Image (cartoon, rainbow, N blue to C red; front, side, top):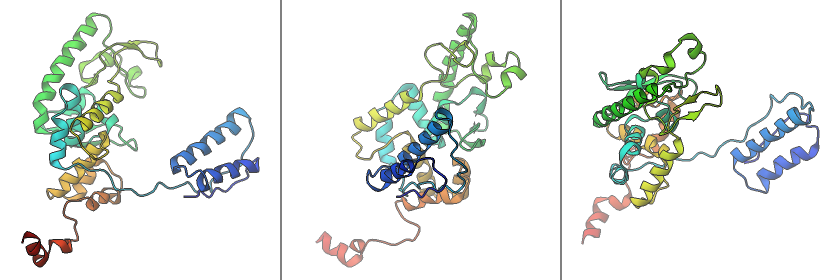
Length: 291
């Protein structure tokens, strides 16, 4: 798709370059937008040249694609190839509809076993939301947190035990960074230096570890679909709708601003809402096929 860009470019070759990317190089819309951002940075911060106002830029649009969704049997096959912490995290992606980084950045205080819910803080769009805590994951998660707490207590004895706090909370609440309820649910296995403060802290687990674990499980389960961590979130939404959950409820659980975003999952249901059937499934043809 060609990106129509309006504005007073300092050099005509810039506009020609971006147009060529779209028309002849056949790059993705995100690649063209990245090239535009790089050029804006170059002229503004490196060459110190004014580009004028660009309120009229028409950004390239991403092509509409249906999400990849696993069947329940495929989800079972995937989980059968996982174990330990990675399986627990993947279970929260599928059982709670968490995004990858929402799971990785989960803190102890945001897991409520009493009400079987998870509070997602500062999700996409800087919004908080509440989603379900799968009952089947609660026991394993409690045992996991017992181990994490022992590790945290050992860190405190060793002179560490601090965790990064968002915004200005570290200045507002002195000592809160060492308290248990602020700790990461899925901490890293090692202590490292926080480049923002220079302090040695235990950060949350690297998200790439979960991505690699899911990718490895997909291969081991011999799934033909290009499944990833986000596929588990797609499957969460689709399976809830298949089981009769209200789309507004699913919207809230996913944290979608617009119900139209959630509606895309109605297009990948096993039995579409329009209720039509393939002509091959008709009574006459089906009977003939059985003969």
